[in-house]
Image 1: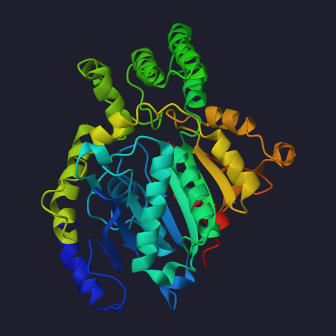
Image 2: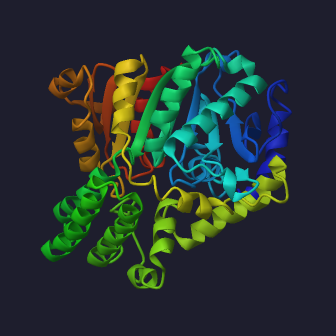
Length: 443
């Protein structure tokens, strides 16, 4: 089914549904979307999918927020059409979508990502704290428009750089709720293949690729020399330089591996990929990897045409707003914050709030490789740390298939996802369904 046919099909389907909730949208089911001015000159876009579960009312199911990475990648684009929304990039209905089980809220953040935009450069965020506070303002606006969701259990999910944004967002939302500034039934936050401690991810690249047989010892040595230099810059809090050196380390990986895919090391890549990347500037390589998710050029063009064409037309996006047109500026302005860890924020969530906190990681991911994630989790300093470390790691079995492993202690759980790269919801839906049930208890 072609994407251009979806809006009309959606309208037909909605004729058979109750019309009290949302608006005719793009794809099946009822939807709502819009902008919240989180600050003067800063306009954040959200897209809500009401659950299509067989329930008497949609509030019987939880609300899951999805935050993308980058910073600058679009939740309404990548997360929605590439991973977990009801329709895929080609306009076909996705067999396994989160919307079948719960309400899903995609947010384009920080401002400047996707359909979100700023009136001028003075209104971009520059720090993780500013991103978190904008998200709290978005939720204030969302609840004002949708007060029926104030008591619905809320769960924050994210991916990649979202692993920095989501913990601080959850913390600020919790504190705002405690102060009576917002009414929200926040229950949990789960970090997917997270960039929570960037240097731990970078230091894991060389050992992971060597053990996988993707690089030899010469390649490993070149990668580690660059990674260790990055670590020195991080230790000395030279943040802009460490971001640039992260890019240099990425380039050493590309040279040694001849173009391995950063998001799934087993994914097929073009044999001339490495040569083509030689023509890109270091900044372009960083941007394509982090913000454009390093998808191939054909898919990248498909997604952009979809979002700027049929989706923008169906949702009535203002003609002056071009999906993704401010993403490069959004990424660039956060270079000073890009390599900063937020381990201390996760510590505060675990010790100062009752929220459930989780991490899920695909074993084939390179950009946020699982060994690096395990290493920063070992650095967490919270009151029930020893309980977690002493807990057994148990199998995740779905329909008698081993889909991964999990380990829990206190209000924290780590999930290892088998046969999955960075985009775990798309790569292993069975394992992710288990994670969703563990965190949201849907149904």
